[in-house]
Length: 468
Picture (cartoon, rainbow, N blue to C red):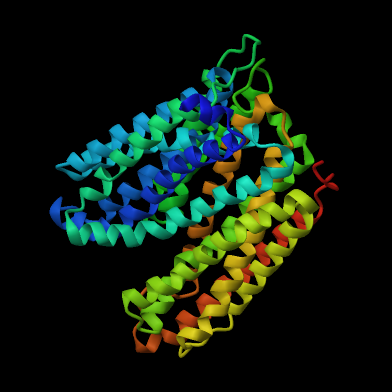
């Protein structure tokens, strides 16, 4: 039966479905836990400052390990790393569900994130390897749809599970899904052959990169709460940047670096990652502040807020595969640049909203940003992954995912900081509404400028030969 699958003319789509399970699971768990945080806080007797580590530890771990596992997969095989990622994620999820105190939960979330990093760093590389160039954009577009659906389904599924069972069920649900995915990996994914050259793993580079990323992200994510001039934040940022500088120096001297910095001399790779990172910086600025506008200014109930927040991923999920398919025929430049311009226009639309906007007056902004993101992501990912040699696909996918996560973190951090500096508060009183709106409009205008800057960068990628 399984030989028939591997010999099927649709085999590449079975591979895509297998990869999609891991991608869906990792993105689902990133969003599903947020719904349960108030319940977890009560049952494990945790305050908000400690509880944030349930989310932060997961994010820090994934972001710092993405290139590490991308490089490791290039050396030992992507199927092995992807399969192990399922096992680690399943084990970490089961332990999360068993947690009896908050710090045990934080620790097991780190373990869970290690598995998620193994999955996320290799999904694009596996797809790029198995699909021919003329279908690659469409396949990566479908992967973008899965990412959007995972993020979309998380809060809704989390709410259902919390209603039917306890908060522990949001972690336990990963076990059966993960076992199905692991079985599919063993039975369906091809056994890729690593490079025949004897290449050593750059342990010192991996150590300095991971240490540097964790400290920099720690300082960035806590700058608003601890104070940007506080000793812990400054120490984290200084030591983190020093470690990353040391990493760059090491990579220039070792024979087989963890991250081949020469990849960034590749114009489509460099421009794709730059414009991609900036797109997430712009988008996540609005994703962070929009819920407070809907609840704090318009007094919308959670179901109404949920409906509006669902518009963006739904539109993106519809557009991404269409855009990916179009990029296979026409190349990425027009689609990526147009998508970023449309996203910028959507952010400008949000900057014009009033304190008395109706439900339907807000929809165009959500539709425009979702349309722009859907048009941009698939062709851009296809352009980035198609620009590197096959033996570098793992690390290229890891860098691509790393840039996406960094964009999310920086987008959230700068928007919250600027919003606070301009006098905005999360739940304003009647006398603070005008200040809130002014701060929100300013943040959206800065985000618009970032999106337009990304469009200019994207427009400057070299001419792209249409795949034959």
